[in-house]
Length: 347
Image 1 (cartoon, one colour):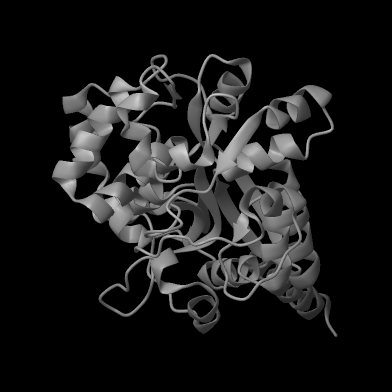
Image 2 (tube, one colour):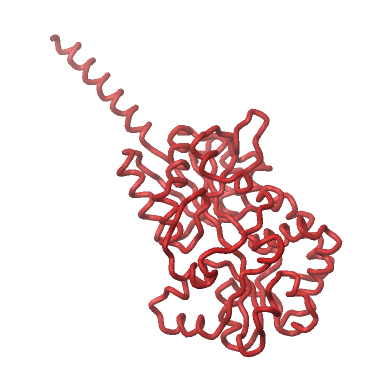
């Protein structure tokens, strides 16, 4: 072989190798700020050989970045942690519809976007969190708080602690209530929450739990994974907080407890869409779903996945009734809900 032919062969080999290497990359924009997720990323790479590059930010930062980057965005997968945010990104055209028999089989229809015109789906819920009520066991009984509606009962005046009404976790809960009660009754209910507040909304869900334990509040609302994290903590102070409070999984005699989601989608301008779909399918697998439950105290979104998380089981008794309204409908209500919050003075 002549030198020129040899160099040509090496160049072709390097080009081919470079192409394969590029094909084995996946760029993820993630609002999941949980260290326990690192195991899932590592396991996916080990199983597939696909290297993951990740950008971590909050949901608002990710959506702003995607809009600014436009078609030049390197993002392949988008991971967000709330139904309202997923809906907003879908409306803004930041996702592309995909078709995956594995995802459609694993994820219930109410936990994913409505099918697009081409039959594809733009986002899928991958884990769920229940929005529950915690209370002062000395001041109240479970029967005082066994539904979200009772949070507006006048006998709770001066007792309720809750984070900002405009936070996506609450926008999603209030959007669900709008589906169940209708706008007029929901607005009256929201006014009742304002009237019952022990303090102006502030802090995160963990702050609301601590407020009940300290006696500043009698009742609060929280996502379950915040409470489970404290129940499983090795910090004695966290464990002491959880021992002072009771937990209610609301609306078991009616439509069920509100469930929010963390979900994923393929970015509109993904350069590695096939790998992106493969990654989302992996997140819906029993192994990853168990990690969501045991690693970050979230319930699996996929059908038929069993798990063993003592904190989640302790607060729910092992099983409970969850609401079945489409998460996409909850997201669509957020603008209407924000207008109601403004009218009733819910900050």
